[in-house]
Image: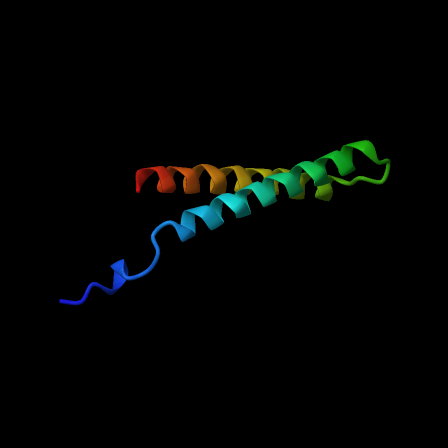
Length: 70
């Protein structure tokens, strides 16, 4: 019986997830700092920054959990 779901690398996904999560978190912090420190920052900038932060933190934590579980 062929187990095709076990053929690939098991650790590549969580490592890319951690990298993506850290990138999104850094982008969220940068956007939030830009929105707070400049006079022309809008509510859209703050919403986008908070959304990016939340997705980045969630992706990082979930990927680290999956990497540790394996």
